Image 1 (cartoon, one colour):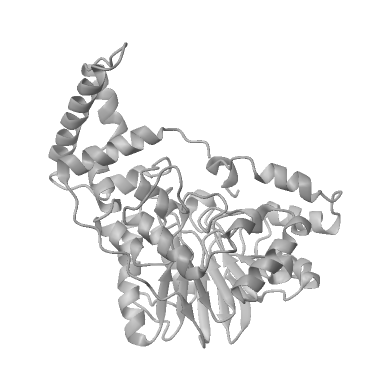
Image 2 (tube, one colour):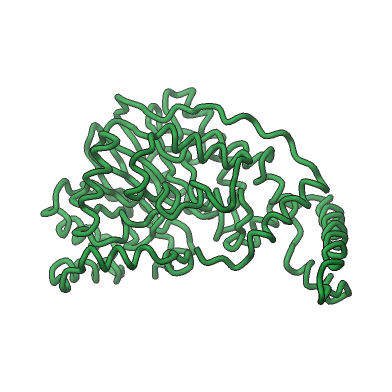
Length: 407
């Protein structure tokens, strides 16, 4: 995948932070339950990307919390499919709230499943391209200036040592300092420490899963490519958990894999004719009837594909993506989209897709993407070949292009 920084830079910053401030010892990667049966009611929401107000609004509409933000879902299982951080300022508030709900839901007989998304993993490994300035600011304290100054001094020492090996050494002057301080705001050090192994956010994320099964449904952030179907749910979760806790290889990581559960977009973007055989294999391998993912915002609604065998829950909740507040309700085996206060049954076969889209369009009359999708389904273009689709998907996926803002 195209990067705006080098792996060397990521490694250097991690090493220097550990050298200056140390880190609490990372916990061992303990096994976490990942499969449940007999769950009568579930609510699923997609990526929230640092937008606390919209996140809370969706939970209130779904009946999961009361006006004071406390758990009101009883024995409901609440699945948030990952991507809490980045693009918005309120990541710390959302994590704090999810932690509270975890405790409250458990006491009520329910459960909160906060899955690991690619943006959680990116924050752990130092890919900070999408961090919102407010996320740094939220972590500042009276000591932030001193922490940043100490970190800067380590950067200077490391740069001076490296200069001895360079034909054109880096000039360390006021311009160097000013540029560095502009790039690393107050709160940056605290942000890195809380996301690194041993930090509070890292430890919390590591207690969660990347893939879970509830009843006959498989949940994950993005999807699984064909080369992943030889891996069990347990093996996937254990591997990514270990990487988050520090066993991370920049050159060979399941958490970074474009066909892994945090990144694969084929279920959301590949033409159904080309992807349908893989979907059948995926369902058969994990013995489920439905795969539920987030990761790829598109239509601003809960989006079924493959006759409802795949459900995309990333409606674009965050303001960054247009504040399309929606959730998925599963009750006694029946699935509903909840949007604008209305419950709309999801289709159970191909014939129901267009009627469902039309009903959702009535709730969002200005949704041009959805209107265009309906038109495309009614008047499909010439069918793309599986070979062309495969060749296109094998190109590196650029996050900026793949996560286009919903207007």
